[in-house]
Image 1 (spheres, rainbow, N blue to C red):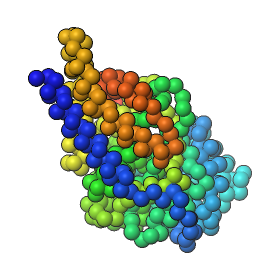
Image 2 (image 1 turned 60 degrees about the horizontal axis):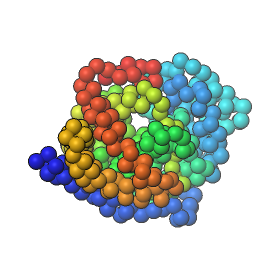
Image 3 (image 1 turned 30 degrees about the horizontal axis):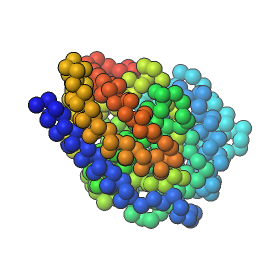
Length: 370
């Protein structure tokens, strides 16, 4: 009976992964399409909190964008940093004579408030948001503008990847992160959006105002997904995922306890922020991993390898195929042995995060949040 239930659950999960693969492949790859500069005013909003060690690297990348400087401005909004983030950004713009770079202090203490304040300081038509610890390529803005200039979309979700090879733990993060981006992209293509990443997204200022921005937020996390769902509710055909390698931004891996805190922060938005479909997928994924963890323990206790091998194989094979396809876009390799070896660990941490979610608070960027 346990084996039958394990196979049934794994089969349903496999179906979901192949569903994601199907819609990922339906998204046209724009990476080789020519960039045509349009006369569209753009504002890149960078909410920053305690990023003194990283923000200069991002500003270097922004200073080298190939999009005409007369049509783009870079707005850093300091979110009550305890370090020199604001001073470093301000000095960078001043010393390098970057006239289209400005810095502000957020009036309230939250990322949503920082982004909203930045948007209020610009008359640009297109808003692009990113994080202060990301690294875009020099065609990043141009690639996003090319997608927006088609006139088809009011909100564009863009790709993010974790940079570098690193150790085993960092390699697992890279694979998991790419998988989440792929699932989010596929759901958008299927017109059933689940999530996007505020580290790389764009939207028209007009639609941001029309849907009342981040007002009515019920979670300390998930500003990106909240906006995605609000725009989708009003304009379901006006959202896209930009599959363009030039639009990728890189970010660093998370270390130690920050990893669990980040996952708890992500999970905190599930009950109050996500759509019913997204909540169903999140809950379903938790039960899949909980069931497989039980089977893993039962298989060891009973010396029954079939309880482990068959359900895990049915779950893992679609993941390996999906990540292999995603890897071609991200120019990364996710070896099968890495995905296979991580299964018990991944099940354990997914279950742990789900159990811890209703209890207590989590810490992020020096704040204690619910």
